[in-house]
Length: 534
Image (cartoon, rainbow, N blue to C red; front, side):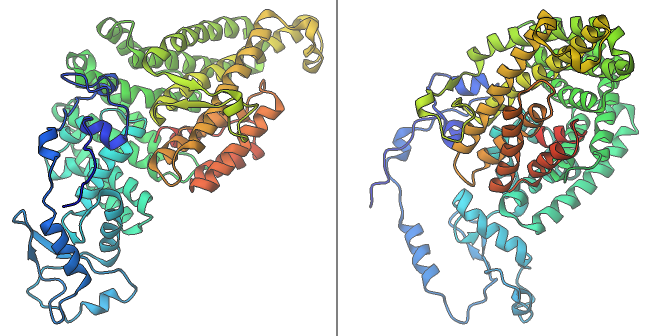
C-alpha cells in the first residue's frame, strides 16, 4: 500500500479553502472570524491507513470494458447504493441509447452526464455516477462559491430552505447557475431556470399570507431569487427583475418588524438584505426607505458598536441619502454645497474610523514595491486572506471615493459661486478650500488601494473560482475610480483597462461591458452593482 502523505489536521472548512487553520479548540479562529460553525478536526488515527483495494479494482475495470454488458445497468456500490456508469457526451449520444433495455433506469441527458463527468475534476467523483446534478450544484455552491462570495452564511440558508421541495428550489436555482458557469454547461443553466420558476411561484403564494410572509424561509427565498437574477444578469440594461426583488425584500423587512432581531439568524438575514437594498438605492439615486432607517436604529443597540456589518450598513444608508440629495439639488448645487460637504465629510470620517478597525478583523499585506508585479499601479500591490476580505475593504474604499467626489464637486461649485466666475476658473491652487484638498487626497489614496487589489486578483490561480469572484467584486469599485471626477487621469485609465483585461482573461463579459460603459458615459450606469454583489 502506497504512502498517501501526512494527513492534514486542519478543520474541514480550512482544508477545502486551503486556509491557515490555527487548530484551536473547540473551533478554529478562521471559522470564528467568519461567524460560521467550525466543523471540527479529523481524527489522525483514522487517516493513517487507507484500504485502496476496491479503488484499484475499479480503476482496472474501467480500463477493461465488459463487452455485451448493458451500459446503463446499475451496479451495487460499496456503500450499498446504485451506481451508473457515465456515458461520454457526444452529438449522437441520444441515438446510441435508443435500443437500450426498457427496464433499465433512464440515464441522464447527454449534457448533464457530461457535466457530472466534468465534476470529477472538482470533487474527485469516481467514474461511476454517485451524485445528482442538484447535489453537485449544492456542494459546489457551499464549498467553492460560498467562501469566496459576498453572500454570508450560505450553510445556514441551505439548512433553512431544505424543508420542502419548492423552498429547496430557491437555493438550487443560484447553485445550479454557479455550477453551470464553472462548467460552461447550458443544461445546468436550464435546470436552474426550472428551479427558479418553481421557487418564484411558491414565494409569491407565501407573500400573499401575512403569516408565511414573515417567516425566515420566505425572506431567504427572496434573497436567493435576487442572487439568481444577479448571477444571470448580462449587463448594460436596467436590472428590473433584481430591483423588483429588492422592493419586495424591503416590504418584507418592514412587515417582519423588530421581532426579526430576536434571533441571530433574523439579524443576519436583515443585514444581508439591507446591504443589497442600500446598494440599489445608491445606484438608483433614491433615499433609504424610512422603514429601513427605523429598523436600523432599533438594531443598533442590539448588535452594539463593534458589529462591522452594521457599521457598514449605516454608512451605506447615509451615503444613499447623500446621493439622492445631490441628484435632487444638482441644479442649485452652489446653494446646497455647504450641506453636501458637511454630510459627506461626516460619513467619510465614519468610514475612515471603520477602516482603522478593519485590520484587526480582515488583515492584508502591502507588498514591497520591489516585489510588486510589473502590472501593478505605481508599484502598489496588496495581498488579502481571501476574496471576501478584499470585497469588504473595497466596499469601504469605494464609498469614500463617491463621498469625496461629492465633496469635491460641491466645493468647486461653491468656490465658483463665491468668486462669481465660471466653474473651470475655480480650479486653481489658491482657491482650493481645505475640504477640496482633503477630498482630492482621499480619492487618490482610496483609488490607489482599489487598484492595488487588481494585482491580488491576478495572483490567484488561473481558472479558479476565487479569481473569478475577486474579479466580479472589482466591477463596481473599478468603475467608481474610472468615472471619478477627482481621480487623476492615469488612475482612471488603469481602472478602465483593468476591467477590460480581467473580463477578457477570466471570461466575465460584464467587466468588459463596464469598461465600455466608461468609454461611453461619464456616469456609472445603474447595473454595475449587480455584478459586484454576486
